[in-house]
Image (cartoon, rainbow, N blue to C red; front, side, top):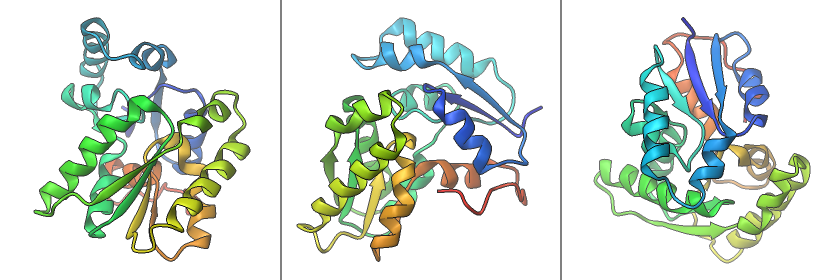
Length: 212
């Protein structure tokens, strides 16, 4: 049995997660059609399909898509951004959370509020809408996507000097993490590595030190 099963809605994540945990046994499922169907809302048919797929898997399951994350969690999967949101809440706020897909806004905001609530703190975060950059991801121009995210986040922080952490809400945004981190003295949180660290078997040494 695999150490971990991952459910993605974009093929690009397969290589990314394999590079983060090169020695782990990962089973990776890609369902781009789920994101396409979910962008206008998750209906009962899609909800049932996601749930039946997850419930049919053995061992721990990680969902890398924030849009379907809540449905996946109800079915028994771990949402990729949950460990990241927990870390963000612990910084105390105010947190700046950037997102690049409209369907991410509501579930990501709810999850960050939950993380603050679980430590008994009042939610303290603002949102940075970067949906105008999503076309760069869709065309596969990851370098331009990461550079554009970096530029936009730095510009936003210039007007928010007391920010305690930056959250890049989607796994697809992780490539911007290292560049931002090199220019800031606050945590820049991305979801893939933190999620793998939380879910791979205890004592597992397979995480790449180069992970974002």
